[in-house]
Length: 296
Length: 160
Image (cartoon, rainbow over all chains, first blue to last red; front, side):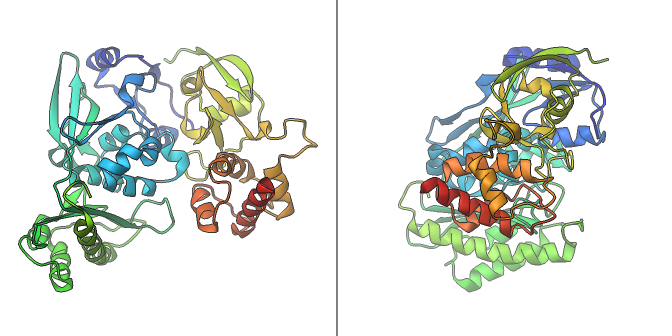
């Protein structure tokens, strides 16, 4: 129950961290909030030769209004800071609604946005939220950087397309389309447990009240965040009647691939996904109806 | 393989300097290096909350932090509550005693350190708010009801 020995470096600037990654990327693990990594080290499920601790890089912790009215999040921003931010509540209400579902306050006080996104746990909230919000990730390495869409970022179970010498440094969330409403829901055995199933939904309405677009992004129903695109597409151009929403929710079943784990059987997860889809779409539609032209 | 590092951590208002291995957990640093055994170690993977301490005023799991990460920071442990000595309990501790908010007491330090900042932010909490606040702390004795009662009592006394 104690970590195996490792070399430890805590650079105090991003360039220094990127240089270390360029040098040691293959054998090093990045320590962000540590709320997933340290348990793995304590159990010795992983025994990295080196840890590169980002916690001394103050520049990576910020919440700013983005260029076109969206939100820009520094990767080392603590989840608790996101939870308490008036800016997040205004610009990205889906994040504000969902972050309190992440584990417990003690965990969110340390856990970071970038750390959870890069860890790529399919049961975690933030990866699904990033996909649902069309977030883009800035990946930096020594001598370069690139932007990647969240929906392309996840390649499998705890797997992303990041190279060993790359670091996730910033998350950009675009402003919501007019007349858009969001809803986040999850079911867990106890508050703060990993979700059996969770769902981030969004609904954008036409001016006449019909649905322009609906999106459903699930956590815990596959090896990565899973968007039920066909189910969402069923609602485009439709009036959001209970029947239309129920038909969309029923279509979710064909697009998810949950596996049985200690939290729930695959069958039960399928059931939950459908129920949550119905409820979250209805709530998102209601909120979209109340949204007046700007961010819901 | 991993050289010791010199760190300076202010714990309960007193700065301590030690040579530690990077892999040393903050929980073990507090208990073994500083002798502050009030911080209890339960699961050592962030589930039980028994090792909760304040890092720069915010409750965190000390088993999920390396001691070297606390270098230059302030830590408060349960020992800081009875500032005037072990005979004098903090009002929150008194409320736990008066409400039977503990039996074996193993989880209590973690509950206290979680609840201290919670009560500062929420002087008049509802029962559901209290239950959400303590959701990251496990207690196998009380069934939680008496802990919730203790928080309500402590809050009421504070407001009086």
